[in-house]
Length: 494
Image 1 (spheres, rainbow, N blue to C red):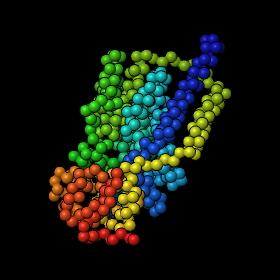
Image 2 (image 1 turned 180 degrees about the horizontal axis):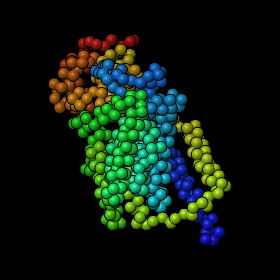
Image 3 (image 1 turned 45 degrees about the horizontal axis):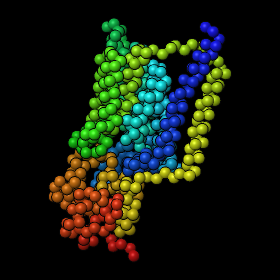
Image 4 (image 1 turned 180 degrees about the vertical axis):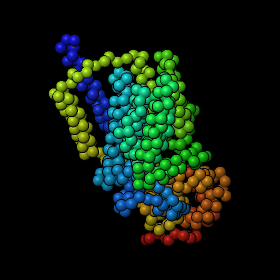
């Protein structure tokens, strides 16, 4: 091998090492620039509020303290670590803190994703898959705990997939990833569920004797992973808390992020599914049954709940990377050619990229102030309710987080697993006035003295014509109704 060829391979190796970081930095700057779009879900308010409560009390919640409809009911926070991180960032930097934290998590996700794909695919294809994954996930990229857990999910599945590809057991060194995931977000149950299909992939082409031994080692790893998931302040209750959301039945069909995918008009997800089929046909891919099972699982998840499209976007390429790479294998780079000087150059390049990203952050933040989307923050309406000392407010679902941030007990909020399927479905039917009796029954049953509803909601329009209620305030965001006789609400201060 000539000296010039060896040097070119070394340069190529250093360049490849920096690609994931470059792509991650690009993703970070992009989401920093559109940071206001990350602040569109009122759940961010109560996530931060709970994080602040944990820091103030040096304890974790075991009961509800934010609603007047479920006070004292058992409830645990399976995202307590994410909530603390968001609370700390918000306390130090206002809304810029959660935006930067979320952008960093997306950057880490993209960097890890490209790094894992880079082992099998060319750089352009790895970067293209990363761009497509981000595009598919845009609707659910918000300043909320699931984004902080996203890089951990990708890394965990990468570890499992790499072990399955090599027909070995994942190293137990990676078990802390599962513990971290379990403390960041309840989605860790997916990581546990994937151990089975990955184990089947690992043993698929082995001889029967080796299959049994390897499967036994994967089983032990799965048990260890489940124990690692219980390394949280809540212990084994973390597993129960994380699965409660899946038992909400019909309710999951009316909460926007848990709704099934809608193909009434063409969407990026629809294009991705068609593209997946086209790739399989064009490349003539032959996949093992366990890989087919994994792809079908991720596709079914995305079709069933739109919030799962990000899992489809980031995990399907990891499953396909090795089969696609075998169709057009990468040239093997020379081993042992990296000198200390070359590694130093690579490290310096990484530091320069990080420094450039942070400098850009400082410059951008010096003239831009991040703000939460207005339709989730009925500031003027809540100011009036506080002035009137309203105690029991029948609030719109999307206003629950903001009310919690203002220390006002809520009727309902985004913690659907706390309220249960029956209660929340009853609430939604009342809001839509599918039965007028539902609305009036809830108002009387819970001794409501004021309502805070979305301006164009059917319930708000109906209350304009119901005897015993009057509209007190209205704007483009929210409408307030109070009892006509003033019961339950003090008169407004002069």
